[in-house]
Amino acid sequence: MKKNIEKLKKNFLILSLVGIFILFIISKSTKPKQISICDIENLKKNIREKENIEIQGAITREKILSENFKLFILKNQSCEIEVICNCDTSNKNNLTFLNKEVLIIGKIQIYKNKTQIQAEKIIEKY
Amino acid sequence: MLNFVSQIIAGLLLGILAGTFTGLVPGIHVNTLAFFIVSSFTYLSKYFQPLPLASFIVSMSITHTFIDFIPSIFLGLPDEDTTLSILPGHSLLLEGKGYNAVLYTLYGSLIGLFVILILSPIFVFFLPKFYFFIKKFMFFVLFFVSIYLLIREENKVLAFIVFTLSGLVGISSFSLPLKEYLMPMLTGLFGSSSLIISLMKKQKIPKQKIHKFKISLNKKRLFKIISVTSLASSLCSFLPALGSGQAAVISSDITKEQNKPEFLMLIGSINTIVMGLSIISLYSINVQRTGSAAAISQILPEFSISHLFILILIITFSGLISFFVGLNLSKFFSCNIEKINYKKLSFCVLIFISLVVLFFAGSLGFLLFLVSTFLGLFTILSGARRTLMMGCLMLPALLWYFPF
Image (cartoon, rainbow over all chains, first blue to last red; front, side):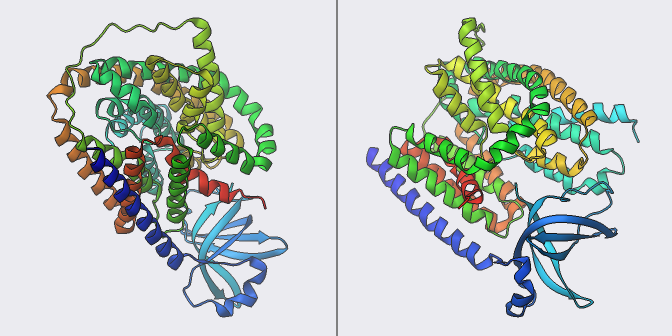
């Protein structure tokens, strides 16, 4: 009985290690590139179209553009960028990220010669 | 559309129903339902105002903390918050005292309710300054708590392995393209692994009796337990990556040599205090330490003192009603548990939670669930404490707050 339990323990440990390794490979292959706001103009040529990037900063302004679109101004150090969010804006009081430090995952887009981020995920940093 | 007061009452009562459901059914957590409310907010806001919806979430969350010890004790199915209850609770179950085991946790939760009411003004008026100070040292606070959890173990190497591997699961899952990663990870670590162990054991639950219930604690001892529990739970309700499990470990170490009833009351109270104070913390320092608090922050972005007052009333009433719901449910389980084929039930629940994970988190989430299950199984079979698996949240938090 004890031998069986020892064997099971060993097997579960090996399966966990293999599983964790696989999870890391998957997360690495899907992890977005981290860039800073100040470097975005220089680096955007190296970023593929529709490739996800990760960017951090504080949201200093918010504006509701239409029923499902919000515009944020994301600031880090002395640089700023516009972020478009396809968020539900029907609740007019839903200003949840103003003045908060956030991590944004999204894609770079050019609109009227201005570089913007189309946000897919906004995560508040505590 | 109902008037405002009727909506609040409806939120309270429906929340109790929902919390009873989430408490009894393994794999269904309050976070799942809370986020369902948030994602359906546009539709629900046509019929309900935001505060009644928030009341529903609060009522459900508090009820869950009263009821979730029932499956933990009677079925051996803990979640991450009730995992410490499994040994003393199951031991009482095997003595035919399952009902009494649940009762101790219910009284603990009831005491927790009063602690929340006493601590709320402190959280509202003093926590913002304290948090502003402690935020600068967050990494060190988490680091010392992590070290403490490791060094208190007899087998420190095993503890380190379990903590680190859980941490690696947490770090990898955070970066996965998954909308919902906490549910498959925590269900695998704490839920399905326990179920599989139950299936492996040849266990028959003895006939349960409803023994006369008495709490034989001296006042000094009770006061010590409540004080230490209140302090540990308060800290864990607003510090990141710390929750009921860690609060229970710290409290039980400080109060020392508890008997089973004392221990069950302790963890009962901790669960309720951590949940209740996480709602107060949302108001006072705008942090979202539980899924319920995060959902409320989305529904009530401008959280005022009048909202808080109503939610504190909801916490109180839902807790008081849930106590009696828990009493009756535990009587029902006690009278019927030995009629249940334990293995068949465990197997059905395992299939059910696997399907829930697959439905909500997809195939990648299911892979995460499997990996977490394997790690959970290794942890249980090695005899390591299950709370070490909270490294899945603590290690990522340490990296997040790393100051250098």
